Length: 91
Image 1 (cartoon, rainbow, N blue to C red):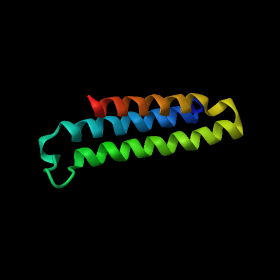
Image 2 (cartoon, helix red, strand yellow):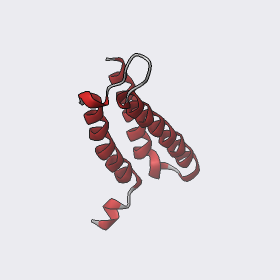
Image 3 (cartoon, one colour):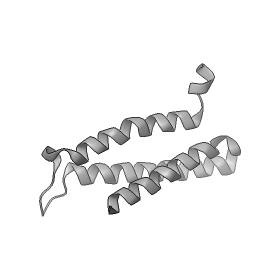
């Protein structure tokens, strides 16, 4: 069981399982909305999640190039999360 937790993709999945519902709550909550002149916490949280996912994707891309296939599932996880974030921002 401990070996399963040490996998890099499991740590990244855990990040998205924690950050995803938090951002989802902030976006759907009425008390974090912004006005016409200032971005609210909902927009800032989506942008932070997008930037974090992009940075982690780039880091994992370099790790895949350097270390091989061990980080490949993590790379696909970040790529799919980025696609979901971008699609959800436009819908």
